[in-house]
Image (cartoon, rainbow, N blue to C red; front, side):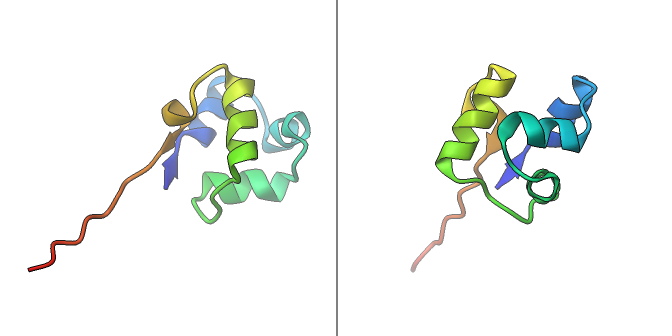
Length: 70
């Protein structure tokens, strides 16, 4: 799953540490989210969306892979 977290954070002039504090997570969690190494829990996704006053879908991009069985 891709996300726009780094883009949104930078647009608002926030450091990873500042966003982490606002969301009650570690700076490492923010870094892992931004690098695509970690997918957030639904609760954290809602917190992030509320923080940025956006919908989850505006921040997190789900790319579903389809398998064609023949």
